[in-house]
Image (spheres, rainbow, N blue to C red):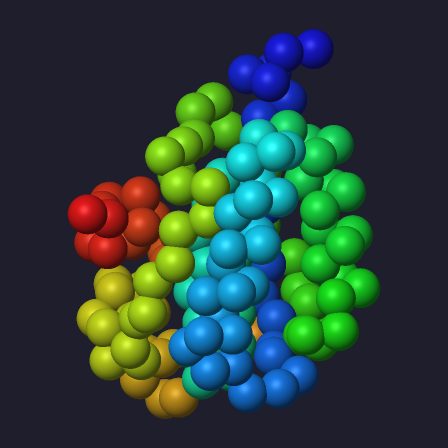
Length: 145
């Protein structure tokens, strides 16, 4: 089966088990980018107020293996798969792992999320519909440069 027929998008949220300083996030991203390039995975990571939201794209089997590793990673807990769906093309094909520092105020400006982040809710409380609204904001290019 070709990647085209087996290409999926997987999005999850989790809660950090410790405080991440900027340098620690850079180290995490560097390791993720190296791994992702070797395994044909692309995507983006958001980190706000101690919670992660990550979108991954790639071969279904590769993403399932990666997600299993993520679930066991001691740097976070409450790992929740929000979206898994087949896709025809990658949205983040140029990003081995993009990273954005996004404020709660910026997130509250996304249509469909203003009530969610306006009341102080974290990525770990996202449900599939809100996760898709966040994904759409990235597809539409709000933070893509």
